[in-house]
Length: 318
Length: 289
Picture 1 (tube, rainbow over the protein chains, first blue to last red):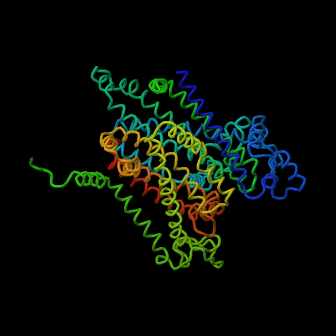
Picture 2: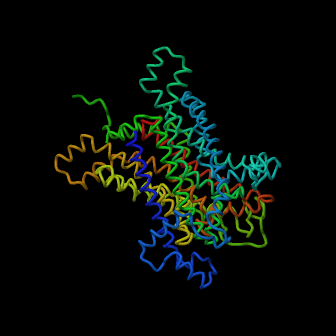
Picture 3: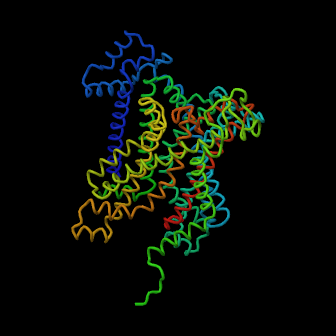
């Protein structure tokens, strides 16, 4: 078990380093002089000189990389030329919005997708199965931003049930916060639900065909116990990894959803910083997204190896 | 030995697959829908007399079925029907080219990774992990920042995003196939590595690759709509459904059809591809029920 975790941690660390090199190289591939780019559109000569010195742009590239990593580790990701604030505090302000949106959407996906998937598997080949599969395909096909616009049209423009946009913090106004979140969470969560439903269905079907389920049934266990205790536990493990992999996909969805509902989160910041040519922020965001993806998938692997002992045994025998 | 089958096994298998596929009416409908969308893209100039980029300031935001405009006009007086029809061109281009590009790059890498295993495999797997760590939006945004937003860069970003998934599929197939007897026999009879990879491994992994591509195309179409919605994809004045939606958001209160129609176009297109792909998977891959 320990060996498996060390191996996974090692692989994740290498990926982290490679990802940081990609971002480092990406920032240096920006058009024009990087010092000019980082100081913003109208950076003064003094600002450009200061940035050249600060980033050591006159030094060899390898030295630059290590200096850059040192800066990262000390939490210095630069100043946004757009707001004059430090990039770290800019991101810290917006992070809670995105985390709330993401977690609620995943929760929505789990609550809707997993029971539907189980139900579809149990009703395999019947009308309920086809119906839920068709709805899932519908959920995968609908553009999230359009779905969002339709919801705004129905619930905000036509009937004023929900606010069309805006955001209040949960701590200052819990009810208002949840009201702001309903439509974004439905938009983002329905895609997650569709994927989880399909995954859960095929996982469940595979488990139901396995020998131990047949044994359990042959023993005369009630169907409730066969499904609930034996089959379910083994099908859920596969879905756990899907949730981890979905994180990357979800993040792209977060950006659009935040854009449609004007939520001040990380996704909106990413899009804004492209148009404002706010490169320090963009660099920090690319790093943050890549790092959190890698860390989350490492944690998912760890959780998975606890849930499924076969994984760690395979890892250890190699 | 009397031969009871009329057709050789390969033909029989193809017939069975076609049979499974035809039974799924939604899948067939999806396939026909795809043909129709391609026809719309090809015959766009015949189907509408309006140019998708010509502005008409005497008919701004005309409602549907008014003043000779089937679906009305937008805030610059451009014909919405024409923009929707011409929008199929960039939509299909992004979906198909990005998928071809991603598949063409990833399949050889995946086959090599699975066939040779060892350190080659480890290196390739780490690289796919790195690509996976950047969602396609981040890749697209990065490319837009470095190279400027354009159709070509949207295709590039959506293609790159497909690479890790396709590598994994090709690798998993190659890992399984290399242990099979017909491959072992080829190795024993002295076939060169390129021959084995191209003639023995590749043709036998076509089914899962086709299934993957049929899911990847609608994914890329949605992705490109998303990019043009955010302004980092297809650039105006080229008509794209995503950017039509983005501008429509401003006029949501009075002219909602501007937002409803392009979204419906995206939805119908991805639905056709997804239903078609779903049927294709049932026909080609009997292991998935």
